[in-house]
Image (cartoon, rainbow, N blue to C red; front, side):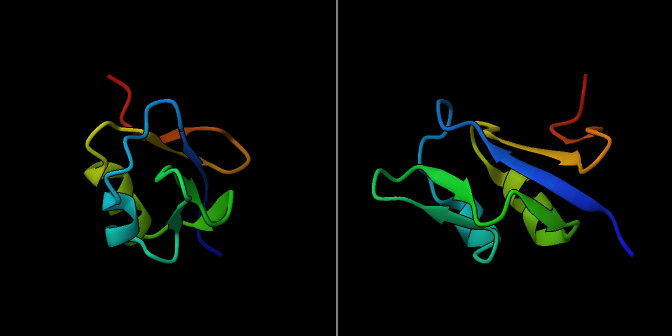
Length: 77
């Protein structure tokens, strides 16, 4: 069984660009206020969700390993 990620969107940072939906349409939705939110709080680790996080122009998406909380994205500096 592969890794699972906890997916969070900081709605105070999100600017509603929709890039996350373009990269991972099954993983993210924009609400009526054009704020992003994950479809599910946890997702199987996959390239589309990672691309959505990496493509967010304001880094509003955080991915952590479910269970451990180890940060997957954004990388710790």
